[in-house]
Structures are given as structure tokens and as C-alpha cells.
Amino acid sequence: MKRSRVINLDRMRKNPLEKPLLRPLTLAIASITLAACSQPEQDVQIVNSVEDCVDNTTLTADQCQAAYEKALTEAHRTAPRYQSQSHCESEFGYNQCYQTGNNFFVPFMAGWMVSSLLNNASNTYNPVYHYRNSSSSYRDRLMTADGSVIGRAGQKSYKVPSTNLKPKPTVTRTVSRGGFGAVASAKSNWGGGKKSSWGG
Amino acid sequence: MFRLPIAEREHWQTRAKEFGFEFHTMYGEKYWDESAYYQFSLQQIEQDIEAPTEEIHQMCLAVVEKVLADDELMRRFCLPEEQWDFIRQSWQNGDPSLYSRLDFAYSGKGHAKLYENNADTPTSIYETGFWQWLWLQDNVDSRVLSLRSDQFNSLQEKLVNRFIEIGHLTPDRVLHFACCKDTPEDRGTVQYLEDCAIEAGLTTEFVYVEDIGRDTEGNFTDTKDQIIRFMFKLYPWEFMFQEAFSANLGHNNIRWLEPPWKSVLSNKALLPMLWKMFPDHPNLLPAFFEDELHLAGELTSLVKKPIFSREGANISFTGSKSVIASDGPYGEEGYIYQATHMLPKFGENYTLIGSWLIDNQAAGISIREDINPITQDMSRYLPHIIL
Image (cartoon, rainbow over all chains, first blue to last red; front, side, top):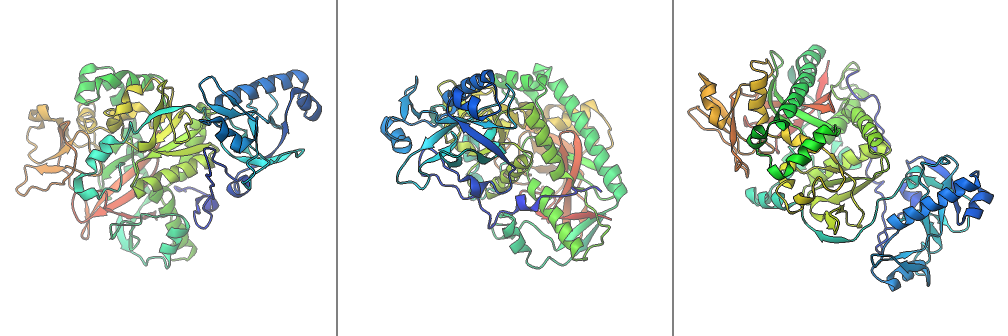
């Protein structure tokens, strides 16, 4: 056979299964239950301290300490960032945000994820944040730095798509945009703007 | 190789909507055309297209090796000197390639002749890897086509597998996809590649090329201020090399798809270089740099192609009585000349075959038709079968 044996048609189908994406604020909140229909799920526990980790997971005390440090490092690198304290607090609650070295405001880490499949030192322990905006339907949910909702705070364990266990990108402060695209823009004036592709 | 008429699938437009194929008709003209298809024998596919495709790819890699080692050739290929380190470094690192498409003139008999290599930003991959696959599946399911019909098209399967491999080489990074605004065709192509990457288990994001930002340390960012560490761009390297953010290229730790060394191959200077290194190869057409036209000897009919161009723009025939030429915004970097070898004609149509590679493996073909002998971005796309 010279062609692809199987193609996952569900993955290829775009309508009516458009992914719903809510982007109310800086933090893009994505509801996992809707977006994750075809992703494999994993069970995770959310722990909020080294003691909590030792008591409630299969990790040893040393592993829990290492996991905590990794999660903190991840939080410094990836936490959702806000220009003002009030903006951050409107989402994560009064006194739940702090100022970083480069003048952003970020929420405190509410805990981190431990998966039963993730128990060696090289793995990522993604931090989670407790969303508290009282006017949002996502109030009292735990979410990761990119706004993926894990579930209501306080549960023993959560089912999450495995992508949520991967490291999140580093967040920075963008100082300029538009540094790419100028050549295409100049060339597109040719032909009355009838340009369908920059490929070939 | 035959061109055969066939009934269009009933409600195929609804099927296109279901699967998000938005650009089957563009500017009121048909782009996807299933009123006919091409039929090949297995021998034609394997011997005349698949094998030469893989061989030419290896020859192209030999060109990259040679050009990168020679400043004079780097200039001939119009690669800006500020980017030489960036391009060379990516080759020395062995940065992986995802895909390419070689364009051939082939009539079903004799040797397929290479027109050019779309090594950096090849398009029509969705139509090829998925949509024509589905067309065959539907027509076989309804018994309009024989159950024994096959297609040279393992593109999607190989794409997903290649994303898995590149993902292993690039652990723990989010793959950002990018294309320009206002191009539904490019947006659709990039969405398809993103779907394949997700199928391969990668984590993805999308950002428009024009929206890419920069932080104070020279990192590129998306619209959520996330640092980009791994990027697929459907945007030519030769454009990026001229633009404001080009100074940061090579200084911000990004795995690029396609890798920067592909800028050597998406360049028409490749064609005279191949002819120099592999003279009289049966799948090559004689080709010459502008200042070496004396080497063309007795060849009187040549095609003039800009060093950089896309989708058949700015191509003209010389030496023939009537000049056939296509318009376009390219050509300022100079031209190369290639021996004229007309596309085969099936009925009223000139037919071009695009032969896809995933990394270094031949992975399928796409067929474009036009009533003009120079196929362009609006040339119709037709499916094919092997029987």
C-alpha cells in the first residue's frame, strides 16, 4: 500500500467540533472538559506543600522536596503576569499576588501537580493557581499558567489531559512587535492584493 | 498515466465544510477539481517518481554541503552575509527537516524532469496528505473506483511520525506555528500541520508572523508574551533575512522548521548548481547562472527564473518567437536560466507533478493543472490513483 493506512477522521473534523476558547483577560482560560475530547487523560494529585506531598502521594520526602523546588522554579518562569497588582488580584484574590523582579505581578502558586506516572527527578511538576474572580464561572477553579482549568479546588485527585503535565513556555515582556512580515506586505501590493499564499 | 473523467462526489462541498477545507474555491475559481483524476501504474510511481525524488534530495544535500563551505557560492545564492553563521550553524548542528516538495514535468513515459525544489515553504500539503486521500476513500467506499485502487500518498502518516521524531529531539518545548495574515490557504495549511503535530503528541500554539514580538533579551514572543523556542513558519527565509527582527536570528535558541539551511535549497540557484555537480543526470534539465550563459552552447530555448520566486511568478521563456511570461513581484536578486522543457499536455491542460518528501523519504504526489504552460498559485488541484 502506497498511501496512509489510517487517518484519524475525528481529529481532522473541524465542524461542528470547533474548540471553544474563552479569552476574558490576560489569562486565557480553556475549559479542559470541552477542549480535550480526544486527548489521553491522566490522574493527578494537587499538593500544596512538601508535607502534603509526603502524606498523600507515593513520592518520598526527598522527592517531594525536589518536586517542590522544581514547581517553584517553574512558577517563576511561567506564572501568568499582570501589569498591576489590582488586575492580578481581581483574578486571584486579595493578597494572593506578589511583585516579581521585573515589575510584573503574579499570583502565588497554590500547589503543584503530581502524576502517578511522573515520579522521577527529570519530570516537570507544573504549578497550579487558584482562580478567585467572583464574577467568573471559573471562580474557585485550579488552573495552570496557560489558563487550562484543572477542576474545582479541594478535590483529592483530578483527571487532566496529558498535555497539562508538560512544561509551559517562559513568559516575558514583549517590547516590540511587527519585526517580521514586511516583505510579504510589500509584495502583496502586486496583483491587486489577490494573494493566497506565501508558500509555493 | 491517464487523465480520466469521474463524477464529483455528491455533497463534497458539505464534506469540505465538515473537515474545514475552506479554500477549495478561491476568487470565484475552482481550485480543488474532482471532475477528473490521473491514473498511474505502480511502476511509473516507484521507478519514475519515487526513486528519483529520493535520489535528487540526496543530490540537493550535497549542494548544501558544497555551498555552505564556499563564500563565493553563498554570494551567488544571494544569502545575506549577516546570516551566514546562522545558516551554517543549523547545518553543522544537523537541524532536522520536516518536508520538501520537488516539482517535476512527467508525462508517464521517460524521465521525470526536475523544475524546482520547494524546500522551505511548500504548500498544498493538506489537499495532498488528507483531502485527496479522503476523496479516494469515499470513491472506493461507494465502489465508483475499484477496491484495488491505491494512491501514492503516505504523507500524513509520515508527517505524524516525523513530528514524533522531531519532538524527541526537541523535548519540553511548545511548538509555535506561524503564517501571514489574510491568506486563508496558508492558514489552512498551517492548521493541518498543527493537527498532525498534536496527533504526534506535541504541545502547540499559533501566532501570525506579523504578531511575533521581541523582548529586551532578543527572544521572540507570541501574543501571550510566551517565549518562542520551537517554531514552524510558513514564511520564506529569504523574506525573514531582510526584515527588522533578522538581527536576532541565531541568538535566541529556537528550533526552526524548516531549518535555516533550507534557504540554500528553496533558491533557484540550486538548479545551475545541481547541473554543475551532476551534469547530464537524466532527471535534471540543463541550467545556468546568468553570467555563465555561454555554457548553454547550442540550447536556444531557455526559461528565465528569478533566484527567489514563489508559485510560478516572474517566469519567462526566451529564444522562442512568441514570449510567454508570468507577472509577479520577484526578480530583484537576479535570474537563472533553465533549458525549456514544456509540461506534458493532457487534453487542454498542462500538468505538473509535485513530489513530496518527509525528511529524506518520498511520501506522495500532488497534481496541478493549468491551461497555461506556467502553473501558478491558482492552478487547479486534481487527485490521482495507482491502479
